Length: 258
Image (tube, rainbow, N blue to C red; front, side, top):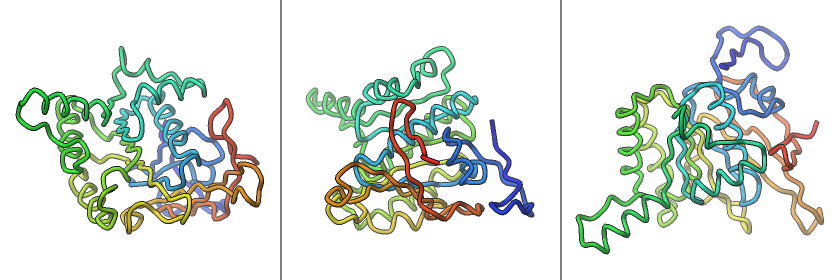
């Protein structure tokens, strides 16, 4: 289902409607006037353990059920581990990788193993899967071969592509946005933040984003427990919710506390 945002947060009709895709979390969709604007680049930023990947799983699973093609790029863990994690929240991704074929996986771990095998066998050097240009080539070829139009593209995480050159983050993300523009994709990418400093692993990447959802925890030393929060820092074409919201992660996944 594609949402049409026709009212702002105050209930006043908007001058122009905007198609959106759902996040799979009803309260968050409400905060976003119906969901993520189609064609946007949205970054989910936060420290490890804040729930970035779980939010990505919600978004992917919900839109797969609505018939939207999803390209899922995983750089943090093999996709089979993500599938197992998703089952804890009653999300069955395997149904979309077989008969219906709406889910397309780009597993960096799998590509890396192929590169290593090629190197051992002395064959022509396999393309570095962590080169952002190679990733763009792979995505463009995948969409061309499978005639994928207007996909939802999830990259978890973007930070992997500049881990050894964080000062290049803005240039890398801008280049990727230009190269993938003709796909008319809606892109959701995660950004890692350092636990100790709270700074991003990459300088300036957020400036490329059309939207930023930041997830964070209260200081453990003070709270004496894990208390997670989220806030929509930016979302173009959206009169979004401006206050932080408390959420939990349980058997239903990411759940916003009302």
